[in-house]
Length: 259
Image 1 (tube, rainbow, N blue to C red):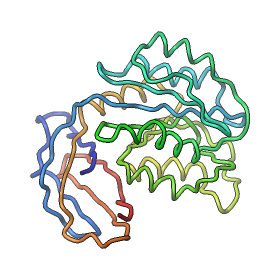
Image 2 (cartoon, rainbow, N blue to C red; image 1 turned 60 degrees about the vertical axis):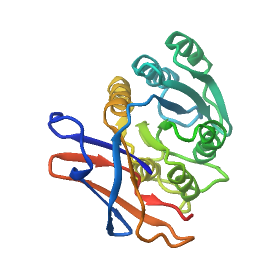
Image 3 (cartoon, rainbow, N blue to C red; image 1 turned 180 degrees about the horizontal axis):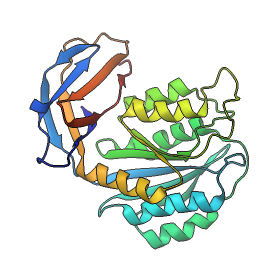
Image 4 (tube, rainbow, N blue to C red; image 1 turned 90 degrees about the horizontal axis):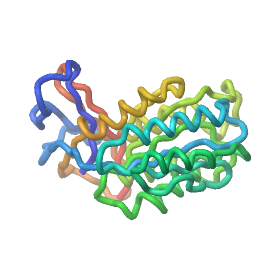
């Protein structure tokens, strides 16, 4: 069972049906058992780069987070986490926009960005207990990681295993491509987090558009797709590809990690 975002390019024609989609598991087309709209409330973690080196001032980070507080739908809840070497809760789970806004004054820039460790901490401590719910991470960052114990591949695999979709509100890359060879470049990190989990990327310069687009999409264009793979070799990762008929845009995670 996987979360899917599907929308008609002309925004007309009503809900999308399973007959308008195809799913391929390791390149083999599968039979879709069920495909239903999922208008359920979302649990959204805003994971905000709070490190010294991000090329965005605190006010811009605050604004990006603030927009989500006023765009979430009834029933949605936000958790705001700032990270540098540690991931710290800035605002605990709530839908109270005024409470969220007042807590944003706790943002302060220090230390180095341990993005991968922060993602894994959020998954393990905040989102894993909420299995069965619509779980989302919005990364507000340029994608730079400097010093995490976790690798990028481990981080992405855990997100895919848990069916957690990642969106990004992307700041300008502070490194201009200069980074150690053993760490993916920041832009690559953001691209792969979104593409690998079915999310999407927005620029930090227009956070109101990002917040509204993400919150609308989660309530209006989110579906749950279920199928039984015809072959699922134990211990092997499997590539996934969900396609829509002409005029339908579809996004979903790109890989099912090993069982």
